[in-house]
Image 1 (cartoon, helix red, strand yellow):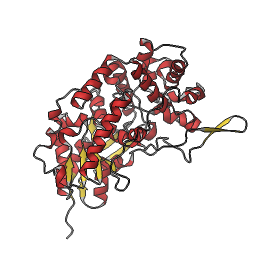
Image 2 (image 1 turned 60 degrees about the horizontal axis):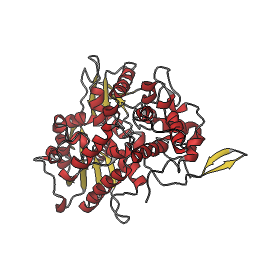
Image 3 (image 1 turned 90 degrees about the vertical axis):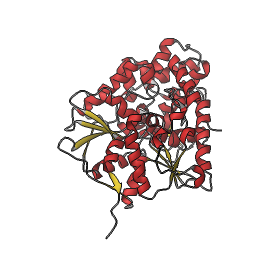
Image 4 (image 1 turned 120 degrees about the horizontal axis):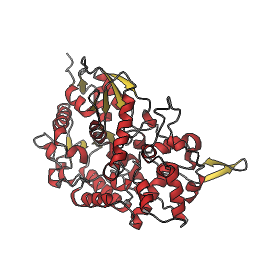
Length: 438
């Protein structure tokens, strides 16, 4: 069964790191001010907090040269697991180092040995008990769907809607969520949901190194989706999308069967499909105060939602020492994430979309993921401020994100001269049934 490789299995990858520090910077930065790719190093200001620094610590642990001290765990827990270092590294070294998989192995090693922050243990217990890291009652998971014309799973449906923990328990966002789901119903979609059985996708547990729990969460969710008989799974959650496309294949978990696989889409991808098919329409939402916006590429919706596929990780040597990959093509360089659907929807709503300096696969993390918001709140806050500072260098004063976690975290750190909007809220204002042809 596939799993996160151990540090022993990652040994060669750890030792191929040349300590070049490229992992700290975005590829081809436009300015020195926004050149950083790593919120962790921006916070720690010490090499151990960077991707390359954590590979050094992982190699030392693997060889028994050091112990997992509190200082080491502290540096590891400041990493948001955003994958920015992986993209930057691959510009120079392709698949020969792949920092992100080693970071997963490092966290799994620390979790197996019991060297994790108390907040991570608390999060895991809450995930096991209530299906979400905040500990909200499981009974409240499906409150957003009360009164909506959704089918029961045994009634037959085409689409299963997956909401995710953050949105499911954020009652302030339920009106927007319900408006979008109503529009899907008006478009003739036969949709269902898992209700209280939705549970955790396993995304956070995997990030924190609890691989066995992540697999159990993933398998339970996949079994429920498969049993529903739907052909399409649509998630509103960016972390869940990254898990479905990038983590589940690592864990050997899949939706559906080989004969009848389940298609997995983010809500922005799905709405874009329906708009292009003429089943939904978007009315303009632009106004004198909302015309130009900047778009924030969330890590999980962007580079980390690029599908993962099994590949030969062995390397050959050429010309006396150059490493060459056996992989048939460039894998997980971050280019295959969900980038264009959110931008297309914003443009369809009459908004002008301005790019931040760090965008697409080189986007800068908001700081809220990977357990950092709970374990290292100062690091999470600093990352948000750095990201919002990028907005000041654009003509826009509104930052839009299609990730509920990013929207909430960035919104908590926004000053009076800017605002953060969630794309779901804009969709709720704009989406409507397509006009009937004359």
